[in-house]
Structures are given as C-alpha cells and as structure tokens.
Image 1: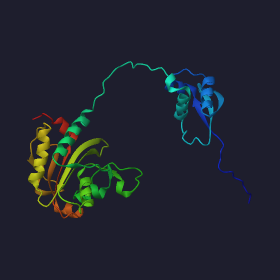
Image 2: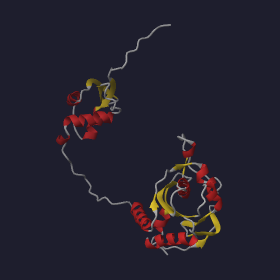
Image 3: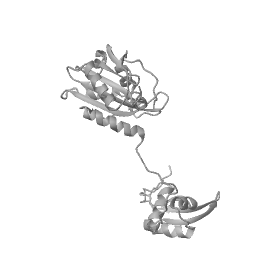
Image 4: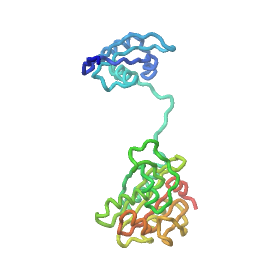
Length: 287
C-alpha cells in the first residue's frame, strides 16, 4: 500500500477569476487592469492577468487561505471599493425621484394590530411551516391540499400552513398550566394550495366562562373600528360547535368543538376566529 503525505493546514491560496467589466459596472468606475491589480494587492491578494475569455477581461486573483470570507466575485469587488476608499466615489443623483410609503396591506395590518392590542389580546408569532396532524386532523378536519416542502428538516415542519387557528391552539396547549384568561392573536402569512401567499388574522380566547357572545363582540368591535361593513350569518365548521359558529363572508368565529379541545389536551373552553386580511381590506367601506 502506497503511503501519501498530507500537510495541514493547507495554506495554499485559492484561485478566483474576477471579471473587470463586472467590477466596473457595480462600482460605477472605469478601472483598468493595472489599477485593479494595485487595489487588490493593497488588500493582500495576489494578482495575475488571465487575458480575455468570451469577450471578458478576466483577472486571476489569488485569495489567501485565511480569507475564508471571500466566496464570490462580489467579495472581491467590495475589497476593491475599500482599497479605493468610499470617500473617493462621487455621489450621483437618481434619474427619478419617488417618496417611499408603507404598503397598503401592511398599513392596514398595523391598524388591526393596534385594535387587537387595545382589546386586550396579546400578539404571538408562529412558524409558517407545520404538519398535517396539527393543521387538519387535530382541528377535526379531513386533510386537504397544502404546499409541501421538498426536503423538510423534520416531519413536524413539512407543509405550509393554510390557516392560523391551529398554531394558536398549539400555543394554548403549551400554556395550559398558565394563568387564565388567555387572549391571543396573530397576523401572519399563510400559503394557499396553489402556492399563493395569503395574509390572515386569527385570535383565541380561553377561560372557563368564554362563549359565542364574547368572541362575536371581539370580532365585531375590530371590524367596526376598522370601518369594515359586514353581515353575520350562521355557519357550519368542523372545528366549531354546531349552532355556535358564525361567518361574515371573509372570516368565521365561534366556540371551539370539544373534540378539538380534547385533541389539544385542553380542559378550558376556547373561542376563536379567523379573518382573511386581503378580503378584509377590500371590504373596508363597502356595504
């Protein structure tokens, strides 16, 4: 068996190619090869000219072994800018002038968030990825189509959530030994079965005397304060007690079904609601 000798650590420089036109385009400069060579050498790189390849002026850069932060061409361009000096770049005015403002959805979300906080709810943030058991089965719903990850880290986080209430129920499950009442809400992104992002609002109230009237009052208070016109109708939903569930076109609310409470190992009554924020925005001011 032939023996081989390996020297470690390997301190040989790594060879990278830098496209001169790419660097000049990003920096807004007209450096030639010699100027770039001087700047790179100031940053302790080795430089060799590679000539032209596919109409590109390529520079062979020898990256020292200790520069483990240099991974791509852009890292070399950054060091060129540092060596040249940021103070030497001449600022240029933009060709067009615009005034930034908040997105309509985000602005409306902030309004709803303030209303929920003012109503005594506490905001939570949960993961977008979940699993079929929590999203459907424990909510007393038959599994439906959902966007699945190709290579999930774990079975607990394999699909994208399509609604928020299951996440809030999981939080109540993890905090069942905490003091009641517990009033939680979340404004977050969900993903439709077609892969489209959909912002939603959901809330839960948990204590011994919570009922349909309490959750209805909370939902109606937020809708009216936000200037949303609505019409409440009776509804049937597998996650809620029959006869104690209502809907208003872009959302639903009611008393959580005892079977769902059992699935989440909860002994305290829970009421909840969920609203499609995108449809809610469209409903502002409409009759």
